[in-house]
Image 1: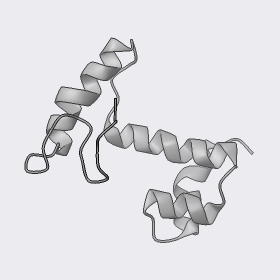
Image 2 (image 1 turned 30 degrees about the vertical axis):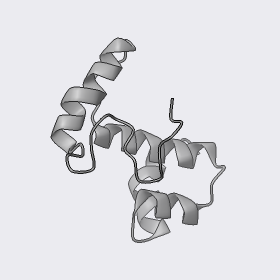
Image 3 (image 1 turned 60 degrees about the vertical axis):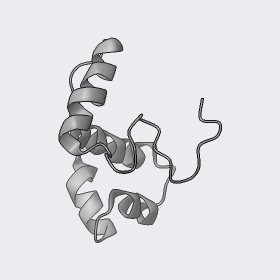
Image 4 (image 1 turned 90 degrees about the vertical axis):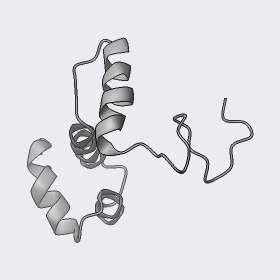
Length: 88
């Protein structure tokens, strides 16, 4: 399905001159996909929050990698913000 796409090509059917922004991505892609899967409505921010929490919980990534992926300024911020959500 992705054959022939270059590194700068978009995969969601939009062109580089009309990329998805936050509002139309949620309305046209995220919500319909979640509904089709029978999943509850989530926001992109909620999915991000879940991903970061899962990174910490699974403990396969170093804290340095987790905070860099999250775009935070320090490992301490990431652990302070999300660490309380993980048992132990």
